Image (cartoon, rainbow, N blue to C red; front, top):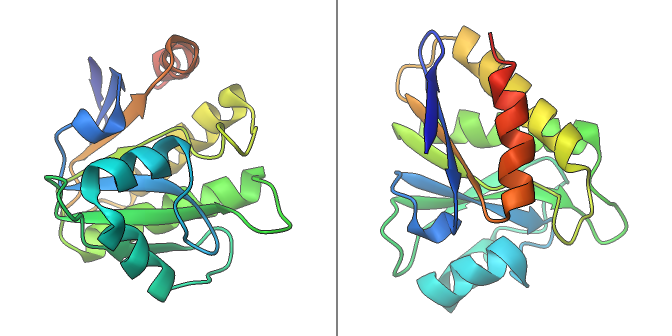
Length: 176
């Protein structure tokens, strides 16, 4: 684990399974229909239970870039935030990922949670560039930090593959 303190928020990088990271909220890289397939969504559904998907789908569809919360089922989180980074006919792009991160952080703040764990949004099934994703997600956390959140104090990026961890670590080293 690597961590760095911004003005109000600590950013941490963790290499491993997102469902094993301790936080108040876990973020699912979702599609706009909010059904949970493979990758991060599949891991959350397997470990947390189908009730997460059932609740999520009852809140969809949403526009790509939006975020909704559900319960966490059997997972040890207060909530799951489903950040829609893909649509039926849309692939992840910079604007959608930026909005999904921003909306997830705002929702975590509204839910009065102190910590949130994100995967690399849109880089799995969506095929979005890891490098661009790391840049966007880091910049969104820095912008959120400048807004002086009252509740969110820790943002964790959980990266499953070594390549994703290395890319995020390189971006992380550039944070000033």
